[in-house]
Image 1 (cartoon, rainbow, N blue to C red):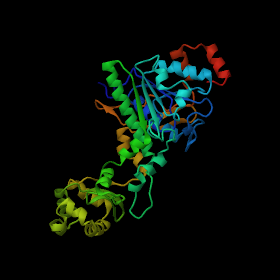
Image 2: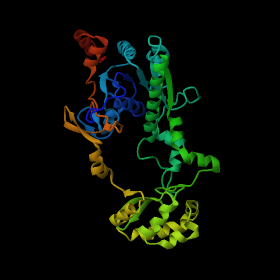
Image 3: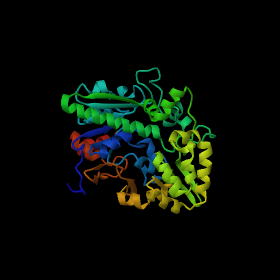
Image 4: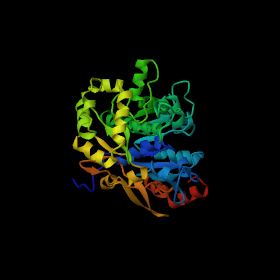
Length: 402
């Protein structure tokens, strides 16, 4: 197989993306990255909310929008009109998967709920993304990443011990929910091959946010209280975190006892620390971190970063520089991996688009379509899938429906 043209695992699958903002669009983008044809439905005038968030790219896009909408077509459609709702229903019948994150009951009001759509397509896979359990007392509450980060305890585990609760740098709950949702859709597609039946997948931001607490969450349950916060250090492994060399920060991850011995002897020239009974096991090092870490900080702080990195690599200890975001994106590592691409843009000539992270048989899956300008695929999609004529399209446009 050519490494330049990998086959697409979801080729032939068609997705109707009725979602907006981040979690739903992220799910749809994952499916698009894997080869599905994704049709994103947007309001004819304002489009997805994120077209107005962050740094502008051309007249209808932003960096925020572009980060979550590659490998999609955009069709403009006013779902508040009877005609627009009927077109959306017709589109759904031409699709294998529907993704929506309307307010609770919103899809049903538009005639686009699962029970309504499956009447005409029993094998439809339908993914509903909400803030909270759709069968619980908070079903109607809108879901926002920042709110859930607070409610799920994520802010309480993030940051330094002396800081107030701190959110993640990105919308982690939305992004994880999108990934979990895509996994569920893939499972449903696999099952459908065997049974011929569709599924209604229901995902909640709060559920996914709580899952992100992972080992911190289980430790809180065991302890009966919040575990301490360690910032850039590890709650269980010592030394493991960000350390300040003489000329800049670096990450050092000493994962086991033999690595600690090599670290002390070959990197910081302190064999006495490796021989100290208090530090010979990780449990001991974690229990005595208040004594050990200042010693390590002193030794690391008087050495230059490059010297430390060379010694760490020679000793077989995982390590790395702490780079700025711009520096990381422009690093040789990112460039060699093809993770940042330049895509043609009708208004600004070209724009940066991150590549999918997936590799199949040694080849990275491509950016087949740059994030779309608002409504770029409207006429083509409606002509191809619904058989609408130029006269019909003109009439719909004149009526503000598309």
